[in-house]
Image 1 (cartoon, rainbow, N blue to C red):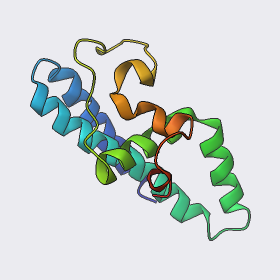
Image 2 (tube, rainbow, N blue to C red):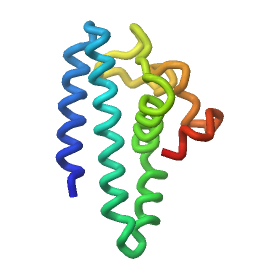
Image 3 (spheres, rainbow, N blue to C red):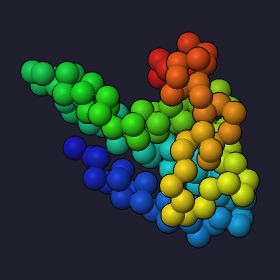
Image 4 (cartoon, helix red, strand yellow):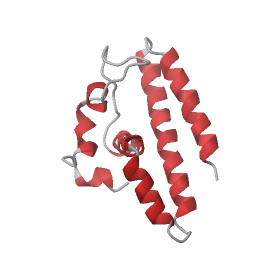
Length: 123
């Protein structure tokens, strides 16, 4: 449906974040937009799949297989519904292969281990 367009949007915001690594506020604004666009890709896929036979099972399996989908869902939900997600200063740079816990602020564990507020996961 519209997933390809949103993937292009995420690529745009990722490029902007790489270019703005030294401009903190602009980087944070682009991170917020990136998280929203990335989460929307999965939402579009779900909306397209669920009316079809076996579509919900396919979507659930796809989400379970890809940590990145869960990660972006979680971070977008935190960013929208709880507090702005802040990258850790000086810890993560373009091309780094660090874990989400190393790159994202104090809310990072709330989604990956289920220890955070119940309302965060429902969105």
